[in-house]
Image (cartoon, rainbow, N blue to C red; front, side, top):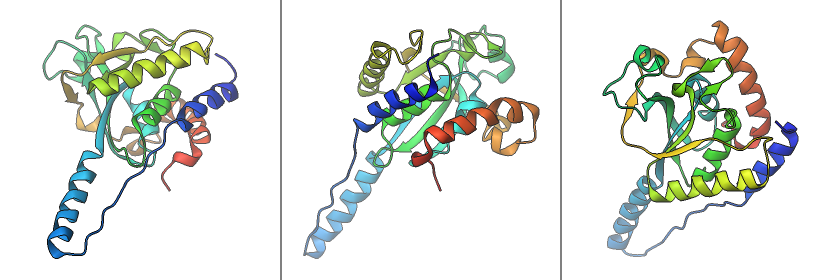
Length: 223
């Protein structure tokens, strides 16, 4: 992999290409004020979006992306397989077709889908096929499950740009597929790092990733 500074610089350039904002309307009559409140409420709801992403162990990716401003909630779960209501043990066999994923609920007035993807690709090594570190198997594959045609086009275009810029020594192998069903993982997987910081995997695997992630996205982190 190329120097981390070079990767950060290139990905940051892509992030800066996307801006967001919102418009507000004012009215002098009571009826218009009521309509304004209703419209603003509807706008706030429409600004809530969901990204479904897999980048190895879901404990790691969850711990990183839940720190970003604009991220309202993160759930760990399973997607992309054939078995209904899979368990962690079943997914771990690599035979269900599911990947460990996180579902990120975010306010796109604060953080865009493009920025979510930038953070996601930096949270793991997207050039590794069906593995992350010592975690090996299709359940640990790098994958984006898109929820709309717009998300699909953004993800494909972003992946293409990063590969064309040779941000990594090898091409990104991240799968881009439609989301069918997201299955929430067992309760003990949720918010795993924050609930188990003294655990060995958290100390020796997740914590170092968090430290690097926080340096790169320090201006995007929640207070």
